[in-house]
Image (cartoon, rainbow, N blue to C red; front, side, top):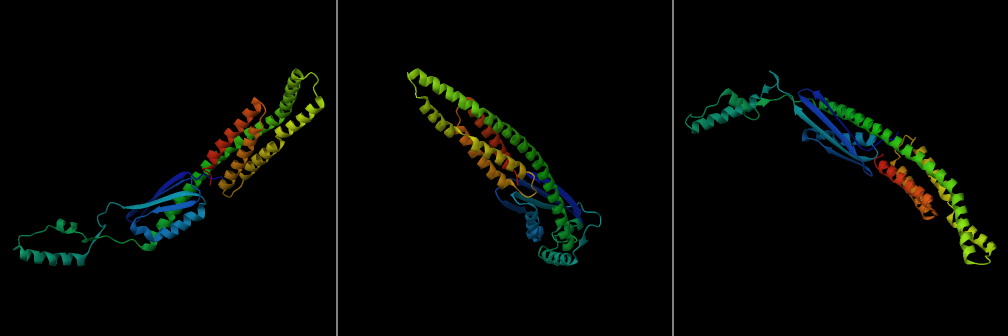
Amino acid sequence: MIRSMTAFAGNEIELSDLTLSCELRSVNHRYCDISLRLPDRLRFVEAELRTAIAAKINRGKVELSLSYKKQPKKAAGFSINMDALATLFAATNIIEEQMLGSLSFSALDVLAFPGIQQEPDIDKDQLHLGIITLVNQTLAQLLEAREREGAQLKLLIEERCIKMLEFVVLAGKRMPEVLLLIRTKLKDRITELVAQPDFDRLEQELVLLAQKLDITEELDRLETHITEVLRVLQQKDPVGRRLDFLMQELNREANTLGSKSADKEMTQIAIELKVLIEQMREQIQNIE
């Protein structure tokens, strides 16, 4: 399955009085690079989250952002910390004695004092399970997005491979015509310059020239590499690096084909091949 390295997914769940939010985004990268942004309260799951992501993603820069927010309190959403309240009153009595009784608090002032309202703690096991469930759901969405984009990339690459094969066939058909044109031009030119041309020597030179201009091996290797690209695209394992290597090989053969070009049409074929290879190379940079 071809996967893109570029994708985004977001999800959230409610857990007790918290709303947990998770965002995952990935972009292309040579290796698997995972970075996490977690609040201190959720740091205890960092190692497990890294392992979960690394088990599913082989290449790409992956950023995970995990956050939480408290839901609005209900009528009985908190209890009073009696120890803190007693400490506050004791301190207040001392201050009032120093200020001759001029200090006074309302009940709301007392409730607003830090530590008086005691919020119920969430069970750590419950919190752990909620985080893992949320991240796994979001990770599954991210993988689906990478696969959808990968399917589109696969189609684009296959289309360009088919076009390249058409140009390879065209170059193979064109080469005999090119050699015939070169042969005719050379004979005419020599006849103009020499009264009694040595046609035997001319034939030998034409044979040597034909060997230098022979592109059979380049066309065969181009066809072989294109066939390999199409085969690799059907594999289930990550293939981005292999495809990148094949693009280098295709580009090398296209350059050689261009250097051996003997007429305008063959030069244009070499240029079209290089354009298609570059288009594929840009797409392959995003494949896992």
